[in-house]
Image (cartoon, helix red, strand yellow):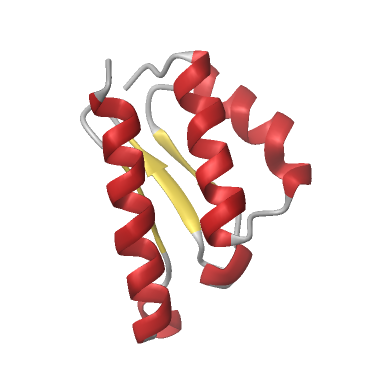
Length: 91
């Protein structure tokens, strides 16, 4: 999935606001998403050490390690993935 700069900035804002992603990840995450079509980026935040953004040819989503799952984290993941989906569907 090749993302547009506006998409990437909006997705990063969601990660900061919903997942407590450190703003210091911004430049690296934005550059990584713009330069790669597939991959994953570990941002951690309130999803724990396994908090990652996954992206490939047809989807983009966040998740965490299964042993880090909790009702609160699963709800954050659900909301964030919904917001990411809306960002990418607005094209």
